Image (cartoon, rainbow, N blue to C red; front, side, top):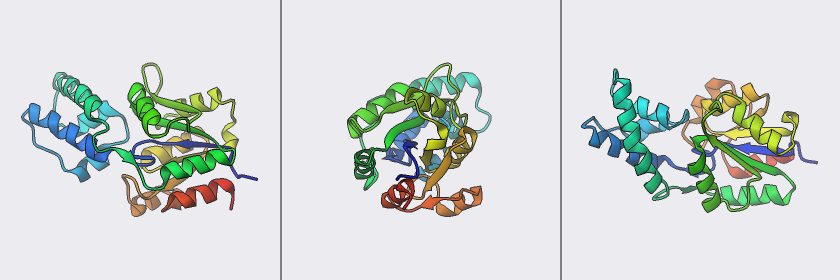
Length: 218
């Protein structure tokens, strides 16, 4: 008997490595604005709270709201056109999702990425695997608020007691806590094991196989 019936996955840094494409989009935006470039490690730490917050973080300190909007207007169409240039699933993730599905576990993806973009990525890389996908959209609070997680569970007719949240960052851990779900934190994403340990997360895994074992209660 599985320990959980529902697995709710984060996207960026958990099932998809989107960091290269996001870094290129960030630096394209900064270059257009005549601003200093950012390293991939800087972008790695800026990701997690949605695109508007990412743009705010890459901008020089004190950048005004009007300039941030201009940057966002540059970033969004460029990233939309190039979001799959280098992006792809982490090793073992498609197999993990199929294995969970074959064992009767229902799957959801919840991301602060724009709803249309994250659904497109789910369709391209994980066709037919997710029972529901929830992205950032107007009127719904972003993670770490629990709203998107609860929306997914509601659409799936599931109880939070039967679900576990899988993510790679502090935003994901806080989302799990705020949603009332157990959390599995993965080390292959945008945060280090040391960083995750300091959060206080009780379950940290290094491989997709370990995620399967935890969910199945083995």
